[in-house]
Amino acid sequence: MVHGLFVRCAEADGTTLSEVLRRYVSEVTPEKKSAESDRGRITMILRDPIASLSLAALDGAAVAMFRDRRLRVNAPKSVRNDLVLLRHVLQVADREWRLFLPRGNPVDAVRKPRVPHGRDRRLLPDEEPRLLAACRVYADSRAGVSPIESLVLMALETAMRRGELASMRWDHLDRKARVLLVPETKTGEPRRVPLSSRALAVLDGLVRRLDGYVWGVRADSITQAFDRVVKRARADYEAECRGKGEKPDPRMLTGLRFHDLRHEATSRLFEKGLNPMEVAAITGHKTLQMLKRYTHLRAEDLMERLG
Image (cartoon, rainbow, N blue to C red; front, side, top):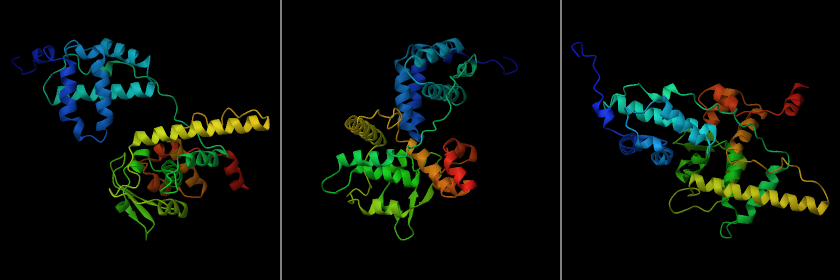
C-alpha cells in the first residue's frame, strides 16, 4: 500500500458480470460495427449461469465451464467469438472502469475451441443455372425479376459480402464509370468495385425504390431467402432425377451458403487472370493471407493454363 501497488478488489467483489455486460452494451456496443451481433451474444451470456458471478469470483474454471456449455449447442467458431467478446468486456471493465480483476483476465486462462479450416465450397458445374431457376419462382410480377436472383447474380459478379449488398444504395452507383462505391465494409475501409456487363444488366433490370436502397432488405433476410432457394433447387433436381431414373448426386445443391458465392466469385476473378492485388482491390481483403483463405482454384482450370 505504501508503494502504491495495492489493488482494491471491493468493487470487483460487489459487481456481477451481468452488471458489467449491461453497461458494456449500453456504452461500448453502440460504437462498434458489430453492434447487432454483440447485442445478441451479450443477451445469450446474460442467460448463462456465469453472468451471476461477481468479477472477483470469475476465474478460468468458470469461463471453461461456460465454454463447454456453449460447445454443446454451438459451433466452435461461434463459441470462440463468444470468448473474444467476453474477454473484451472484462478488459474494458478492468482498464477503463477500474473494476480491477484480481486474477487478471480469466478468458486468457482457458483453451479456445479449435476452429475447423475455412470452407472451400465452390459451385458445381450445373448448380448456378439450377439456383437461378429456383430463384425465379419468387419473382416479383411488377419487376419481372426475383430479388434473390438479382442478389445471387450480384454476389457472383462482385464478390460483395451479404451486408454490403443489403446496404447498397442507388447513389453509390456511378453508372457511367461502371463503378460501385461500398462505403461501409467489414474492414472499416470503403472501396470501389468495378462492375461487369452482367452486373450492370442486373441493376438495369431492377425497379428503383423510393427509399434509395437497391433492395431494401436485411442481411439475415438474404440468408433466409437463399436457404429457401437452395432447398427448392435441390427438390427440383431430385424430382428430375426420379423422372430419368437416375440417382441424385449427393453433393449437388447441398451444404450451400450465401457466403459461398463470395468464395466462388473470388476464385473466378483469379481464373480470369487478375493478380492478387487486383482481386484484393475488388473483394476488400486486407492481406493476401486472408485472400488465400477465400480462393480455391480448380486444378483442371489451372492445368489448361499450364498447357
